[in-house]
Image (cartoon, rainbow, N blue to C red; front, side):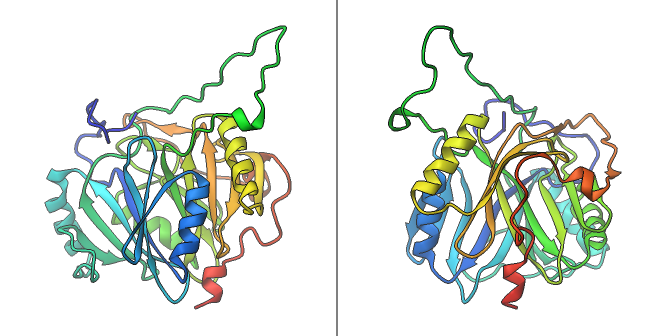
Length: 320
């Protein structure tokens, strides 16, 4: 469960300064209408508001992201949430580490703390709800019966869309520098990595195996947004619904090693991906997870089809 609805006290680790969640992402794309079609097909409530698009989960209406007009596809900024009492501590922490605080960008008024990461990506730390679960999200699948057909007709299949944003993965020229910055400045911790190729980081107050991850590339960029769905069946139904709308490029069905989640990636119109994900590993707030270095050939995925040749190509970086 998450603390979005306020039904249970959010977990936290006493004394540690660290963001607890990704609160919102904002993307710039050259065609907002195309983004509305893609994210709506994916299962989100994509609401046009003027020249912006806001992206909500259907069940609770939480706004996970916005899309604005831009000359090319890029991450406009990423907002992290912290506890209210920690915002002054973060201000002192940032200033003590020589981080230059910035004014909010036009149209994004906020009392949060704005600054840039090691690659120049705009970040915000603001007070907000803990959107990460307070315990491992269970993956449940209804039992099947004997003496009957258990699968419905496709037209009668009930699809459960994304319930929440699980994590964001960005390209970076220096994965090790990214690990250092996001640990030292935001308080995230390393979950696992494969050399300087990819790294996964979790939040110390209880979170999925990773809330952000970094993949090596020649330039910054976004690789994918990952969305949690309840079961592997919902992954399959989501993928079929996307294919029916013409979004049939991607990778899956498979299971990862680092994070252990079942996955299927669907490519967006600009070369990045949205991932349907289920049954991610969980790091409780009471645990010091041991982050290890894994061989790339052994730690990418446990099973599934071979990924597309351009799966880790940074199309966003090409436009820079």
